[in-house]
Length: 586
Image (cartoon, rainbow, N blue to C red; front, side, top):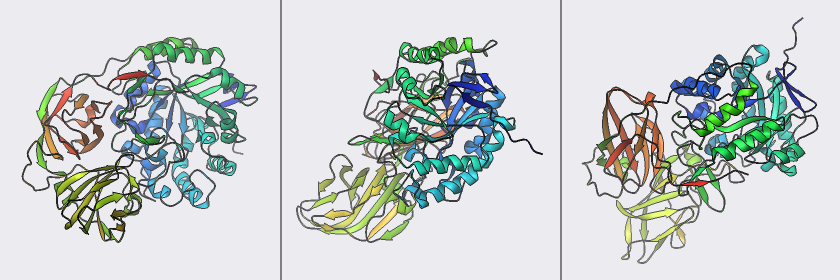
């Protein structure tokens, strides 16, 4: 008779137990999807040296299933390899595979093809649950054999993330809980919510231990935890993320360690969010919406104890000292600092205008009205909308619902920029006439938290000239691959927009920090890999370019700027995240 697998982690009378012995989870969040896979082991070893006994990671659904039915667990998406590496380093794994993750990640991890299909996200809506079940059928059988009950490192599994601040569909939580159990997850199930009674009530489900998310609030968490549950802060915010156009958020080491020590003194367990933040490579950075769109920057350094490039700071050493007494033996030695390339500058040679790049892309679809990104199958990035129009003298062009930004051209002449939360109309040339209208629309980040999660991108309610709609639209979806030479003659460096190329010859590849003086609103590729966005509004000045992306010899950087292409790319020896402000998440 086969023995039923037994969970490694349990809780009894408010105490967390590991194989029946009182245990403290000393965890830190490290996201495999924000780290080059060649650097996974390095970051996990730094976490272990910090004194952690557990690593926690989300599993972003949209990262693995970018097109419906095409699920990828290879290379950068090999979550099983990451979990096994954690075990090899000596860490338990707290895995958070819920359909929604927040995490300042595009669309909160929900695929855009699904949010385009139903507005009832994170509910028991049959359309949503059918997609979740198909995803779990692909994912959970990969995780189940890696549980501690089968000799693997997974000891805890989160059902949903901060659901109590979003909704109240209890049947949805039950479905997720039962779906995990039915597919073989036997380890400790948890939920995670903020420190209000309403959040805890609506985010809890029987059969799962509640946990909390806060920057400060140990006393509140103690009062709100359910009878019998162990005290666990599944996200103790030791730092914070940044939005474009704001300042770089930091939290002092003294402030952070004060809350950690208060939690430990209360008998609690902790997972620091983030222990190592990593990078929102590509266009995976999300956005918030608080009266206006607040796009998240490319860096996810988050003022974490282990910096974006693996460097260690005062927070690391404070946590190492606080965690050490909970270990029977010595902690692993502190790793050496990461290597960085020496400062250098390369000219950014313009090789085409924004319209050159657009026209090099074949037309995708035509339609009477502009189609959304979702209707075009575009995850993010840039889509060009084109239509032949006529207009009277003094006519005004308007886009009532624009998500999020559009550069407007008429017969190749740049007329201006429209923005979601700014000007959404402009005056056409005074004499009237006709011509080819082009709007290059940029999605600046899909909202990852709150009621705007899942909203569509692009031109949503049409384009008007005066009071009438413009009809007959052609769409060009710009790929996220590095743009190829458009075949146009090189444009003058003073051009308002364009594609430029910079070349660095590197003898010894190492980490680098890239700056783009003079550029304004750009996408940046290194050797064909999309590093992310750069925006002159800051606060982030330098983009992280990890060592595995560099080659010995020639390295090519391509910059596509919708507004103002600079004249150079710089390698700097230190990161620059911009002017700072102290911030503690509540």
